Amino acid sequence: MKKLWLLTMLFFLQLPFGGINAKAQTVINKRITFGAEGTMLKDAFQQIEKSSDISISYNNSLLDDKRKVHVTKAERSLGETLDVLLKGTTCTYRAAGERNILIIAKTQDRGSIKGKVVDEKSEPLPGATVKIPGTGATAISGVDGSYTLNIVPGTYTVEASFISYETKRIQNVSVSSSTNTVLNITLSPADNKLNEVVVTALGIKREDKSLGYSAPVIKGEQLTGALSGNWTDALSGKVAGLNLIRSNSGPAGSNKIILRGENNLTGDNEALIVVDGVVINQGSGRRTSNSGESAYGTSSDNMPADYGSNLNDINPEDIETVTVLKGPGAAALYGQRGANGAIIITTKSGKKHSGLGITFNSNASLESVNRWPDLQYEYGQGTAGSRYYSYGAGPDGASTSSTSSAYGPKFDGQLFYQLDPVTQKQSTTRTPWVPYKNQIRDFFDVGQTFTNSVSVDGGSDKTTARFSATNVTNHWITPNTGYTRNSIALSVNSKINDKLTINAKVNYNNRNSDNLPAGGLW
Image 1 (cartoon, rainbow, N blue to C red):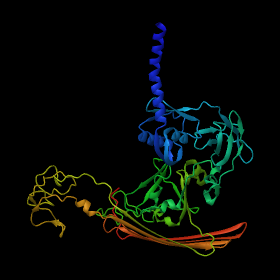
Image 2: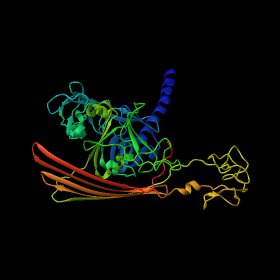
Image 3: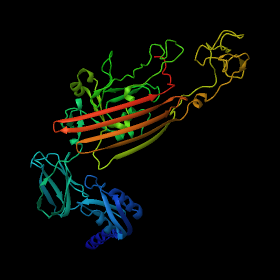
């Protein structure tokens, strides 16, 4: 009897486990329709989970779920679909219950790819990256350039890369079980930015990678891609440590370029401006007024105007590159004048063509006020909370119009002596005391800037030339303000012999504005 009871218990204990295995096999054999073209593996798993009502679990350190997979759309079993998605990886799968799939590591023997990464002189390259795309297998070369990749048997493509070197791909690398495949990789230097030439002091050209200091370069296209009224605005955000201080006197207003902060409390902190090796003056020939003095005279009735700076007059269409030299590097090249850094501007020159190269650029931009302050329209102008308002002394009492503070009577339609807009004096009759809402907003226009530029260049092996003409017309957001600018540039380069080259550049700028916006009293 005891033996019969024991056999019966074993029989019933095995029943549920057998049921689970059967259900697990059922989910593996479930038919689904699936396809993926360039989809990340984790997204593919999510699609399968939604269509099959299952859950797929895996460890990110075991499986690269960001690799792209390509699977032709067709009806397959869930197991066949997973086999395709995991092909070439070190993982397999197993069912864990009725609705769960676990991605696990394969237990089969693995092979390896070993070797060294060297340069064109057979010198080791430590820190080079060697990987097998699509599998997650990656290795970093050691001090001696050696690396090891462990992978399941198969045929793969191996990719090696290193900074300033061309990426190399070796295809059809065979890996056998429990064996080492030797693969030595030689990388060639890349013809990239690290070999670019940078213009430093006095027109000296040096390779970017040979400089011992920071020298970021901004291409001319980056300045004209979205052209604004003042081309220096394009420098903002493109160079670390560069602070552009604007005068808020319109598109023709002056500005300052500060590099790495202000380091002088009493002197000038502006960066040195150098155009084609020539240091230019930041001034405009007519200075901005200060200390309450008017730009148009000595009367305090007029507000001072900002005439801008020579930096603004440079035509951005003629700029080839802008190199920014910061701190001690610039000081060593330009002495005390470059102690605050330097902005090195190189203008365009002619290029050799079979014929003439003609370029025409046309640009239009619009601008408007971005934000408005919150204004109150409950109380009007006045002094010390007076209950009346009078533009100048009048029958109601002394003048209360000598302040800009809104600390006067409440707007209630009452009648006061106010400004007569025709005579610019006190009105002869009382007028209603009411607010004029949005009057300031209605005052401003939509700013417009139109730029048209044409250039012609060409030349031979020994002589090249370039001529350009640019017209800029600006109407600013303040009515009846703006400017026009006409620029002409001529550049001629001639190589006399191997030891003598003559470069000649002529630039003419004419900027005109008959109503500069007021800059306020400083």
